[in-house]
Length: 291
Image (cartoon, rainbow, N blue to C red; front, side):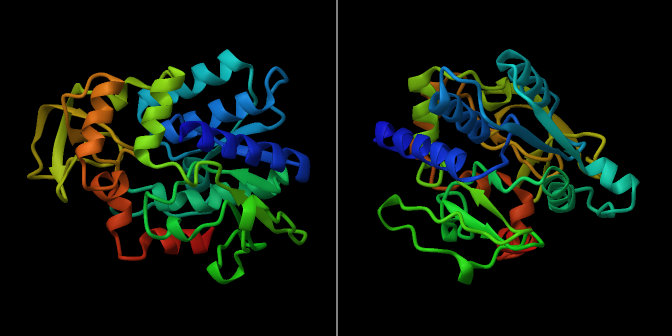
């Protein structure tokens, strides 16, 4: 089944390269974007990657992940654009939230970067198993001139036929990993021997409890009064802004142990570890509609 998923993703990358003028790949240094980049490099080897990478930097990213991002870009000789949430705050484009969470603030710098560089296709690492709003996505997801997503405008994709037609000012988000599950991603990482940031494996870390999750202290404003920190053995199932990405108690120190742990889990990675998805029942869908 991994061969089928890989073949499907490679086909999507090649289809976009042939159909669009200025694609870009969203790359954060998280496991899904790492797998997506690995597949893209495979799709065009031995030629160089025919598009750049784009990272929306919240300013509250995990240092281990940023170090991995920069090491990967340098190692493959890739082009990287960075859209800064901090810069958007400093220039008044967005306003800092009282809770310190910056994940919802990524929309404006992302759309600004898309408009500035005239990207017409944007590869994302979203998967349908992550969250119910993402399950509504097509592989080719049309976005309007404001970057917004309207599920009523999505197009059928029978027989893996993709329609990238869009009007001036619109663009298409493309999700090559749509049909992967979290378990598929880890099994593919194991098969391909893909290096990941150490944050994905069990390690000792200072954390504090908030909202049923273990959050890492940092410049974003945690912990608050009454939130005591402690050292625990944890790992991260997904990686985003430090203010809303929770760690899970774990002793899984190898890929094989992580796969065993995921197989027994009954919670999706976002449901278990992402506070930004708990803001409301439709938090993810609201962000998608905004861009």
